[in-house]
Image (cartoon, rainbow, N blue to C red):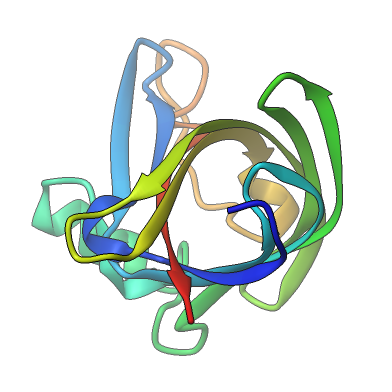
Length: 178
């Protein structure tokens, strides 16, 4: 499996989730259920690879319908006008055995900023149907205000309803394309 190939995200075995602080006391998690993308490269050595990912912003799911609808609104993702957020790698650096720093550009609501993800190669192998698969996990964080996601509410005890920092957690299974 050590050659440059096209690998696509297998959405039923992949997860893109985020965590924000709520009322400065609790963590609230959400995820995006519609994620697609590809890696062109060798999963055993990502340093020469390119990664492109597209996420449907309307697929946000926090397990609370009212909150999901608010996140789809113009206060946050404005899914009607900006249906996709995208990530494109710009540089991948090996930081250890199976460990990588992935620098890239994240675009949300037509605002593009650099972001860094710390990624781990989880393994690769043949599936029961003769295909080849590879797995990665990654994490990072961003300031949502950098993307124009500025809505918030002040708390009477001080502080704000929603943190500016958003933590990102990604689990991806890739399927090699012939």
